[in-house]
Image (cartoon, rainbow, N blue to C red; front, side, top):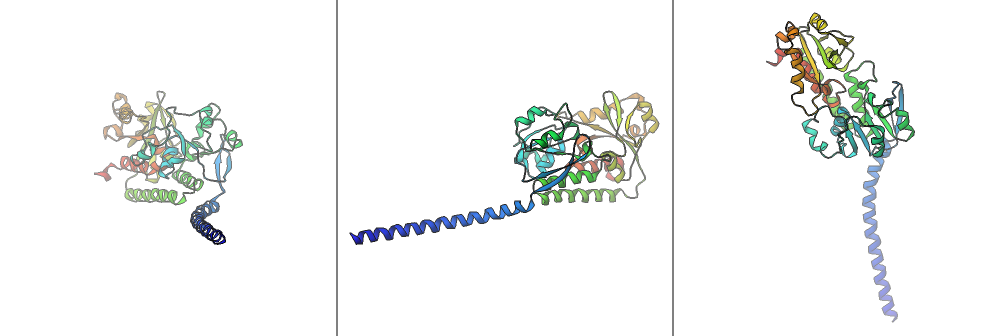
Length: 337
């Protein structure tokens, strides 16, 4: 009996040792992996970013960790998130003026996109977000309300700089937005890769047009029957200036057909939003080309009236390269022959 008890004790001890060893090995392996991931996160956060309120005052916000439930509204907000590989963080998206770029359509198909173009506060609240990424115009009383409301409820916000916050809307602001999102989501390497490509392409485009005769242009958009011009301090104006072009009516604002005829630019860029309508761009261009009152324009006679998507020259985000290329081709058509 003693021998039997001794044998049982030995067997049980062996099982316990094997079990402990096995568990220990598994635990160690998991812990090492977790430590690496945790260390990377702990070293990165907290992250403090400067954004703005509706009064255009700077506001500092701090992220203790990577946002998990994001509401992204408008073209650049959605596409930048997709370009950074963050589609799984988007809880709700809205506000596309154009289809997302082809390379991001697969990722876009995985996210929850709302048919409600500009989301209201109640809709966003239902999603329980921890981060809202949008434009200046949305944070007014009639839509989402002031950013202070969200910050008091531990929900961070970020306004695209060129959406109405910055007095001068520049390519640098687009780069800053992308880099800031890289910091917020701890994907700085991806953000830097995108901005490096933007800088490289801008440099190439500027080099290609160097030495060309200065070209005058107007960037216009038909709004409520009026002709609105984008001035030199807009993002589109900055792109044109970088390419050696001259934006006429540099202060921007509404003009009449008589003013357009008097300015008589070498080329005209007509801003459009297609929102699923493939003919939208040409329809906007035809408002000039097929208008008998404007037939004397140089741009009409030389067929230099060009459509340009709003998303390529207003809060362009990852489309900044597309905007630069579009302006380069329209300003210097002889370089494309």
